[in-house]
Image (cartoon, rainbow, N blue to C red; front, side, top):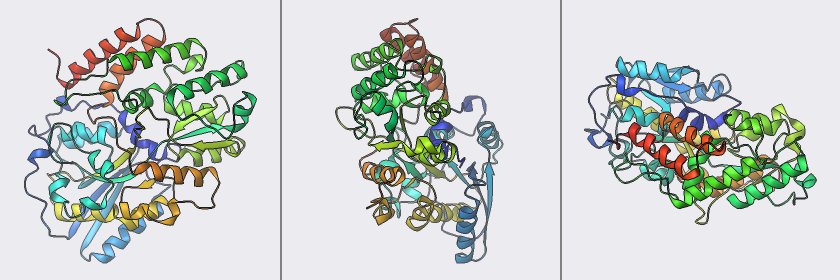
Length: 438
């Protein structure tokens, strides 16, 4: 896990393009045709592949692996950690060649592109014994709408909080103890911050790739129909929300050069004091503290921005077991071990993430009683949110759909398309990608 991204890697992986249609990955299938549960035999060697956890979490991972091997004599886990850059190409090529690792760490959107080829074990069947121990919303994050089954064990989670610069709030005449709670409040506070900043600082960064569709879902906009192919987010409510973003951009709420920038630039802007609000994963507090101690000292933390229904999103990383693995018994057993309550609790105490296991979340650590630091507050708020949170964005919203949609939204913010035309064209493009068009 990269220190600058933490669990936000889950969202970052979404931005990686996949072109599985050209890869000839086995026969088409889904998690509904998972076949018989994995064999129970445990022994021999497996390979675990993770995304950029070294070197920050090397001690933790090697400790878990050593403990597993000690408890299961005759087993050996070879841990391979690959950099984020180029991971897409490597995994796609490995899948095409039939060389996927025995256990692979992916997020739902990245994994589903491979799952569309029916590559992974159905955990509803193979791990039915442990399913009740996981947060329901995390487990369902790996279900493909319109299909039965689930293609991963949920691993670590995060639930966004609202970080804000209390010093800039005071300069803008806002209450430093009252962060925004709704989208309208977010935009209103952002406008006041930008007005007070007079170009020296602004209210919000748009971070469209990471937030636009998620924010629609939080506001109750239906994203995808039951077929799992037809996109439906060009509703009047979505058009009205996009119009608000257009007005915000014209009104200077966002930095003018931020329109095409991604989430990493949003973090940099917050750490430099250029923006006053950062809705994001609480794990970024550590990065802020490391890179900008003065900004960290002025940072307050509030709950996730939500819509009228209070829908709360979570980001999830999972552990997937390819069907083609030659040692499925050990692979499945190790995936359960790595994601069990004890090991996830220990992982959560290293970085501000949340475990996907219900028992872990009962630990007093997540109540953060008496801990008024931003990290403690964020941990408590995030843990409270996770019980009702879901991964609101369907797994079909992969990097290709993201690029098509955000391109149209950017044109709307630039005034080159009306919000209605932008969303209509975005739906049309997205339908082509998921096979609903024509």
